[in-house]
Image (cartoon, rainbow, N blue to C red; front, side, top):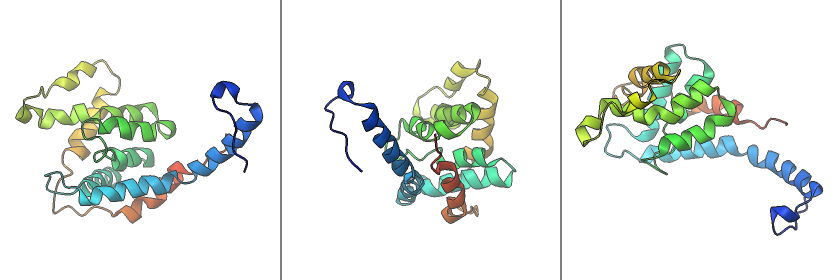
Length: 182
């Protein structure tokens, strides 16, 4: 595949962009592998918590799956903290950016805002306003996100919980991120 020769987008041609779009499909074909790799990186990171960050994500997804949530919701539960080791204070935005093109608005919103909703359970211990989530009280997804944190996210630190392993979720991740022709 020929590489483009432009030095700025202003100089680019339709033909170059046609080639780039083919390459983009190749890049997209590796996304599932990269997502799974990033999740595996969470395994060695405990961050002081009772379980490592991967186990927390697996528990969150396993609880949602066992509760009958659909695949899209379970995927968001699995990936909600994928950015923890990249940007701990901004990790919801990383997860939301990853899932945005493939999930519904309500699941994207839940993923993007879960951090501030999760804060309800512990922010008062670290000098922050546990009710900061109330700034989003007018959102149609407030209750949905509140429920996610209460039922799945805040309780997923149990060292005795038997979660599904990452291999169980690999087909879900691969299906969600497989290249789609545009």
